Image (cartoon, rainbow, N blue to C red; front, side, top):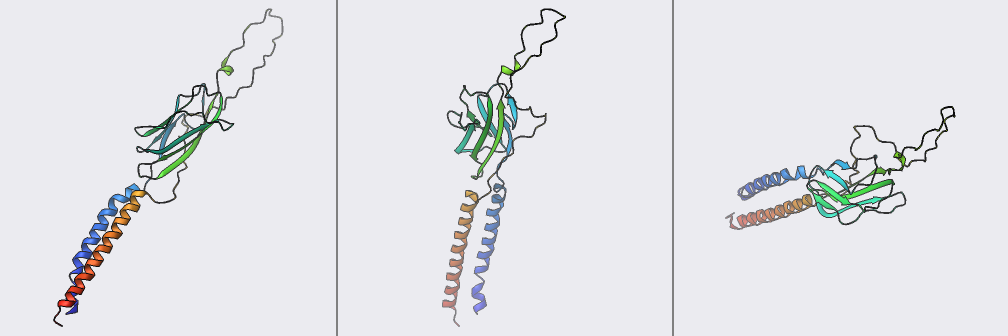
Length: 211
């Protein structure tokens, strides 16, 4: 008679297995974090003047919570102003208008759409307009030998070739997404409840068994 007492738990275990598969199905795509699709300016780009804002674009819309973008010069001075603005799939950080010529390093960190933090860095250069000024004046007489002109050193960095790839995101992969942890906790609680119910049903069946 005892084997008949185990049968009531079998449908419950079948339902539990189906529930686990249904919950794990939508969790799998969420494990893939957002990736950088481009930056403005691009990595290594040389500009005549500093941009009004730095933009980092992603494959999905990042969360505004915890977003941070730093734009530091060679001396480590941060030239950002205001807060990071999330517009569509891009995170934009305004810059102070008086940013001088020189090399800048952008360090960004956002929370991707799957609640997992990602971060990365890229560089750009502001050349200024001094290097573009042409020497004034012409030789007074033709027989005079040409006098070599000495141009002032420019701080411009080599302009990257066309087709430069966007900045590479140094994504952090430590830890699990919050959504995955919550889903796993719900599954464990449901499994525990179902096991307790199955054990109670088995004891009740044993108590009513006429032996």
